[in-house]
Length: 309
Length: 190
Image (tube, rainbow over all chains, first blue to last red; front, side, top):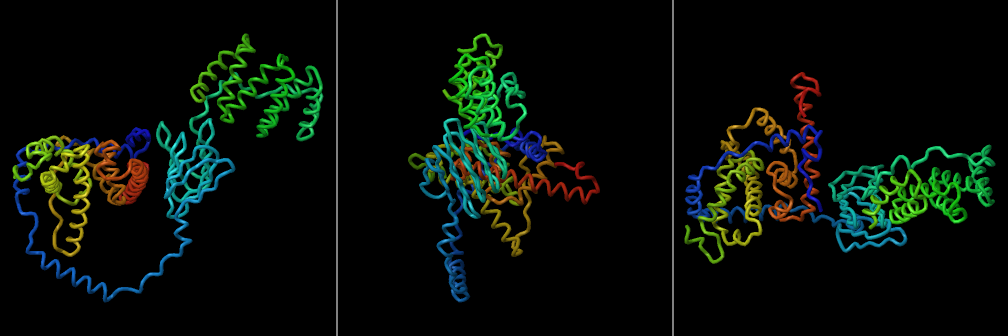
């Protein structure tokens, strides 16, 4: 684990941190070497004044007597359920691999785990990428080959990454390692609409595009591409991938194949599926040698290689 | 005294003196920061009396500086509690404290120290100890973990909470200062 930096370096804009740094910068007054003689003289003195022992024993006895005399009724032990509440509540999704040996230490190696640390309970969750400390918080940790995503639902958690620590509060999430930046040239905001479905919108448009995509020729290519883009914008990743894959399978050298490959690449990077993104980028470089965006794709692929070696 | 501590595997008095010369100044400053109402010079002497008496344990320590800091933290906590108790029962007046900082310190540094000390007074002891050792004394995490006998992760957790506590306390102090001085809140640090 990386050692946290001094506060002043961690939060350079914080006035409190500046003040603490200023206080810490005061040098210590040099030690007077002659004062060592005082230490030796003090060490030579008897360690205890044993004359006080009888008085001490008497006071202890008196104290014990008083405590016994005024002892309150024995407290009712807390019910077993409340003790159980002190442990974190772990809810794994199917396929999640984790260990919870005892106490607050939890290790999650794969899959998704919902963690609830109630009042008085603490949890220290370790994943292959980050470490998470939480107290009185509810959060979700999702570990994949591409990294760890932590989403906090209640309270706040401390997430330690190799580059430092960060507090993630309710409603926020953090992904580590961070996805590489996608060069602007690879992103397309506007898509040319397939002419046969241009008058439609919503689910009717998607149905129309799927139908058109089953035909042949340029219109089918345009329809599959637009279908993939619309599904992606709607957050339907699986449907978007299906459309792009169908397009590449049927029209590997079609006029839109570079656009489809790039859309698939962006989709995989955003889904943090770095190994698949790397493969798509390499395919693009092979299939679109003369494309002006090849250099951007190559640079993105190199960034992905660091994340999915 | 020298013969008394010249046990097999133990440090000699001259070796302990070497530690006193090397680390005495920073330890005294740390003691003053951990227990501002107790005389740090007196505590430093007591710390090295312990070092002389436990010279064999000190000799085996992985980090002698961390060991000394560990004893310093315990001594400061004990003496602070005792002094408070004695004052409560009227047995002892607040004692004079020795100067522990270099005379070259500026007025700005002195004000910062005063504010930070006031803020630290409201921080729970366990967090305060980690904060003082890491932020003010500049000890690395591993040495703090050895000194306090706690896992490294606990050091970072306590540090995280201590920073929040100190920031909140400084904010409160600034608000109070603004109220009493008539200045606007933005004109008062932090």
